Image 1 (tube, rainbow, N blue to C red):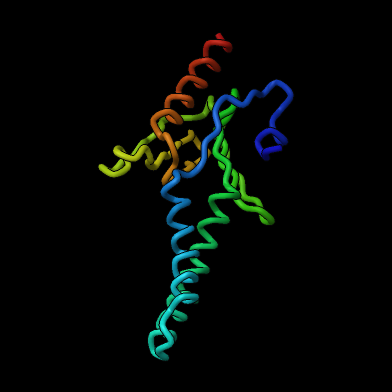
Image 2 (image 1 turned 135 degrees about the horizontal axis):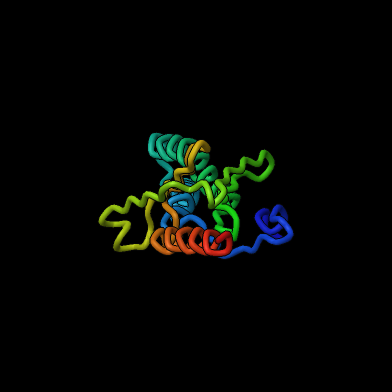
Length: 157
């Protein structure tokens, strides 16, 4: 069961959930697997072996951090709030009530537009902001936030 489902209120419904884009996952996998593979099949030469070992010792921890971050992050829109949860053991949550959302900014590079990822920043009134980078389907996430805000305001009228 996801963190968002466990911490939702009785009347709160999960409307949309997403995660990091597959390119983010791929980056973590390449940083982890490629140096290990190169180290395993490297030539017998001493200096080449030392160079590959150094590359492995540097790249693998970064790759593991990326993979754990991708695995342990939940990004969701519920009927009441926008939530970003990260962490496995030490959990950090950020959420903004939909009625306090002032604006939703979307940044997409050319590659982001081609591959379907971007950076979304949700600004709240008096609550700061939540920034999510390399999120999958950022346009849909933005639309779901806007739809949930409209539904919340319509039900309040």
